[in-house]
Image (tube, rainbow, N blue to C red):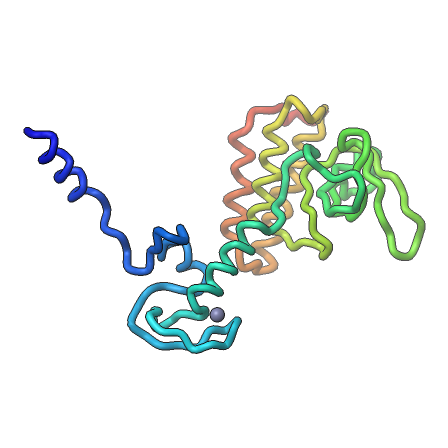
Length: 216
Ligand SMILES: [Zn+2]
């Protein structure tokens, strides 16, 4: 087989470029499909810029340019981070926090405040009363202003924190967090949370982790 022939075979075997893929801007039809645009032969009005666009699928919600903007906004949005690593200490964030000094039933709380001491102190910011410190562990955090809703991403971050037995000194708190997580996932099912099945599946992954579940 000659080199030239081998080259041609290789080119022929390469995947066909989908209509709507643009090697110049780097966005493929597949990238944009989940953000409201797919290639097609239809004309439509974009929900964002309200311009008429052509060359889109019948069910397009956006023009290609606005779908790119939506994709980038989604890629750049703040995400849940497991543990306390990288947590800003100069501004409040939202965090799931295990309160080790809790005498209440609920040891794990979604709190808004500022982390300190390697995630083991969390100064809760409260609108009506003065700020107070909680002692325990930041399980995971997200840098947003609005109180975040329970999501699969948050559950994944909590399970990842449980898996981290090196930088978080769990003592016996890991199985308490696991129990709370499973209860929270069950509650999502009862409440009819639209992602309940995925949340429950993500929460059950903690069972694959190896840590002591002994209640002494
Ligand atoms: Zn548009």
